[in-house]
Length: 494
Image (cartoon, rainbow, N blue to C red; front, side, top):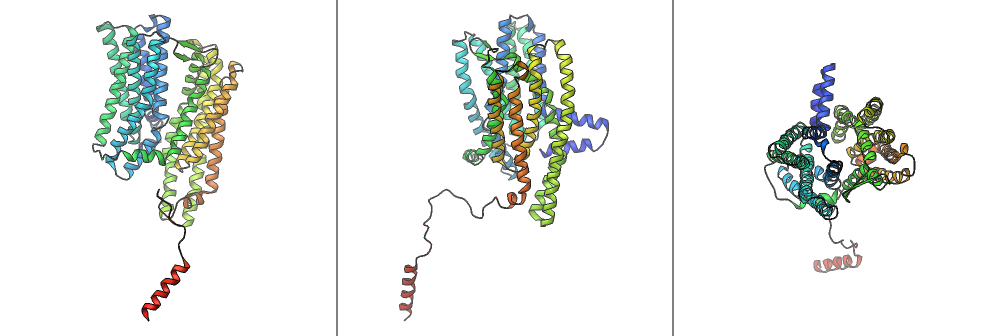
């Protein structure tokens, strides 16, 4: 993310209020702008097409389809393959093997589509035959789901290329096109409201994916055909896949637990959700989403510089320089975490108070607002845990990352199961306990790396190349054979 850091540094160097506002705005654009564009476009289309006049069952079914599209497309893309593919592309760019990027993209896209689309097709058939939903409605929902997988998958590669502004621009274009398409279908062709909405979203998502793929082809026009290297990377970096799997699963597992609660709702005998808990989760995430903005800005501006200085000292510096650079790096790491906690605490408290005052006036009251406070605290800790976990990736401590993510996921699941028997106020206790457990493990691991930094840096390698082949004979010297050889040599000489 060095490209982001350079741009942020240029902005903040002016040291003015306008520069600070511009820096925050840029951070928003490269982090949450795509999500905001989608939410805004759906809201505009629903109001422009008169979606509120539709029947309750129709509105509930459409909301369930949208919820499942976003949740399970994210799981399909990020649950397994995206971190390893991102690592592959970064290494290929660093080693100037640009022709290996497109093979990675194609293999990864095939694996992701198989992983996501086959279960999606099975579920769609179930929705149609068991739930009695019209085939056209199910097909459009499935098209939107597949297109969103394409969009999120291509975003992984453009993010590696540091092209965050273009990603946001593509989302703006795609969602604007979706709004125009919805108006055309509804008022020009007189298509039903829900069909117009689903068709427009599918078209918008597909347009975004095509734009992303076109930009990627412009970056990497060559194709080396080295498809097997991707599978080699998956085997080599399986710990990275495991840590990402547990982290992403932990983000949603508490929702899945409450989908089995007695307060859940089932639409068309297929779509299961818990509207109050899911809405409270959504509000809690946006209460703390600024953590990502602060973290990106701060890490790119400060810690990355110290980490680079330590790496350069290791390559060609004296022991005193290496030790001093390592100490400065970990001091900066501690400062980053503390500053992140301070700033985010102020922002979270402010946003929380605004939500408590404003949201009830907009109709978000009752059960939602009773569940929300505990979830807000949980996601506050969770995003701090993610920052610590990100630092573990800096030091290639994938074992520590797996331990952190697995602990977070397991404790979140168990805590959510237990909290279902408590009052609504404590429904979010699972995410609180899970995030705190993950944070504790990540921080303990960072402290361990700090105490053993020299050993961790210089003694983790190997002097010999590792190969998978038959083990050689353990006998390296035979005394009798050596004596016979010496005797024959002596006789020949006589």
